[in-house]
Amino acid sequence: MPLARRSLGEVSNEAEREAALEALARHATSGSPVAVELLIEAIDRWAVARHAVRKVLIDESAVDEVTQDTLIAVAQTVSTLPARTTFAAWLHQMARSRAADHLRRVRAGAAAGHHSEAEQISSLVVSDPGVRALVAELPERYRDAVQLRDVERLPYPEAAVRLGRNVDTVRAHVARGRALLAGLLAKET
Image 1 (cartoon, rainbow, N blue to C red):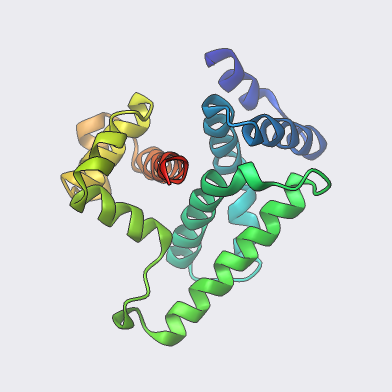
Image 2 (image 1 turned 90 degrees about the vertical axis):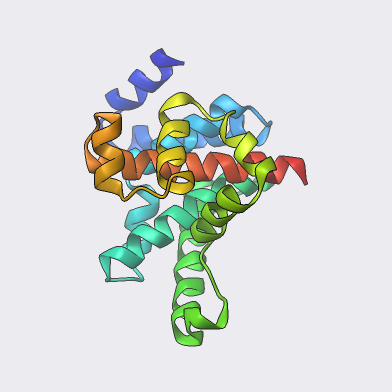
């Protein structure tokens, strides 16, 4: 897996990225947890979902939240990717849909009980011992970040200091960890 992760960093142009994402997505549809992890990492690293979300939303904190919701949705539903649909088109549609969901939540008011998927996963980590047990199944870099952020409720800067990572890396690891956790939860239901 380190070789595959290193290879993701070597992809340099848009066509190579699309081909790599398509290949990873097709492996992920077969249920490969490694392929799902690498797919989530590639989407996040290359800001593919973020780019699609930014076409709909302007507020940077909303973009962060909706991008994380999109990663979660991908991890939960990649197994349903239709064979005749390109992954890029599917992902962009999912990101736009999550952005529209966000706008509806904002209009309805968060006080009315509408929460993002990232907030729901975070809440489950805190409140459900079974979900906390699944956190232990995450790869270490994601497990530690999710543990500090969602269980210990540390702010990102404090979690970054504890982990010896920069804040943006911790944010990425929490987002990826939550997405992978959502995928594990989807498999259990």
